[in-house]
Length: 198
Image 1: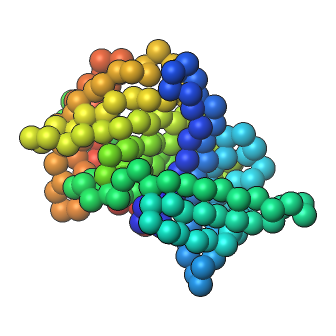
Image 2: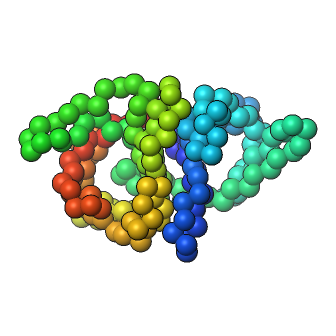
């Protein structure tokens, strides 16, 4: 959860097995936590719907409760980091280099790629909120050091062989945008510009 956006992923790191993911935006109001689902891989019919919970927090534990079909549902979440890196936030890809020196602007619309970063963890997802399509997701932990952003991949919906890989990129934040360049897991050159998602 960061900047009014949330994402979650289910995966088995030991078996390199991706299970599913969901995410979107959220609001907090008088102890009520409401999610607006922008993607839900196990049931796309839920995209565009809201889930409302009663919320209570104590220390590093967050408890969400709601009623569904007459049954009480309780989710307990444990905080694993408090954010605070130079890249903490929800980011949306804005431009991508398609040929050397040529940047292609990604038009804002329902088709988007979002990357969420806490202080230590990251997840990206490519989705279309209008058609309810899901194109892929991946995530894990990351580090920032000496202008290098390094991802340690723990799950990847498209190719489990990438789990366990670490890839490093040069990064800088200029005028509020995140500039990201290096080589992908397939060895292709990448230069992307990400903007904070509103």
